[in-house]
Amino acid sequence: MMPTVFVLNVEEFRPLVENALARTDYEVTGPAGGYWRIQSNGEIAFSRKELGFKPAVWNGALTGGLVGEVVQFDKETLRIVGDGQ
Amino acid sequence: MNIIDRMPLAGVHHTARPTWKLAETVHFYRDMLGLPLVHAISARGWGPDDHADFLHFFFDSGNGSTIAFFYYIGAPEPDFAMAREDYRYRATHTAWRVESFEKLMECRRRVEAAGISLRYQIRHEVIESIYFNDPNGYPIEIAWQARPFSDLDIADASRTLDAAIQLYEEPGALTCIDDVWRVKGEQLQREMEAA
Image 1: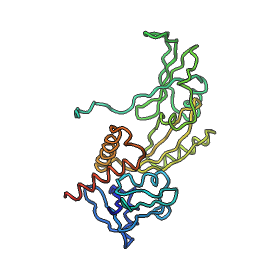
Image 2: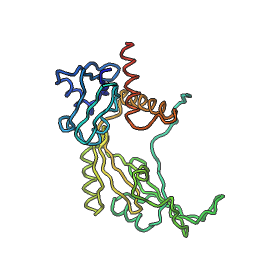
Image 3: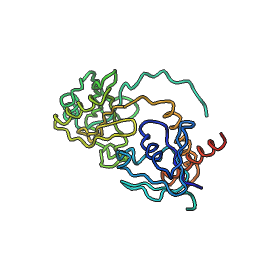
């Protein structure tokens, strides 16, 4: 299963969507039912600094939902792979 | 689940906590923060417990709300009431509302000018807050909400808590927040595929 991140369609999480839309290797669909969906054939990665997220929002960046596994989530980098990858 | 009509509430009247620092508490809220002292009850102990005589006093925290304290005369401070440096203790706190970011910053300036040590200023998703302690060690937060909660926030809150409760009710299933994110994400995935 491809790694998938759901992002609630509110302004506070918008940088996740903007960042993913700028990437050719991510597929972004939505918003549908209030959520954007970000998928990738490889892994999905975000940088806190690129997103401009302060720590409290960064630590809740996946609150919209997730399919896959978080393999790195430290102060600066978030990486998600698909199940079984 | 029973859906009941909303109770006709109009906001917070008061929250109340005990204090063993009577003078320091009055000085802090009335004189340092500038919250008017608006009501004080002084009474003999009463009720079924061996209740100490007490003072119960209220400071105006705006918009009809107050913060209140009990001072129990001669009653020792029990261990369960002692402030401690632990996030689980700080979870019990009072958060006051301000109407703009500028007013939040004005509060920060006033708190710092009064010599109160600011613990943090934190931007959350929808709320930005400053935090400091009162003389009892009770945490105080002043919060500005950048926008009203929307239908999306409300629906998302239910999805999050539904996922968490599903895991919570299954022994050993809720081990970290990723578990909640996955249940929520898998539910959304199913809904999108069905659409």
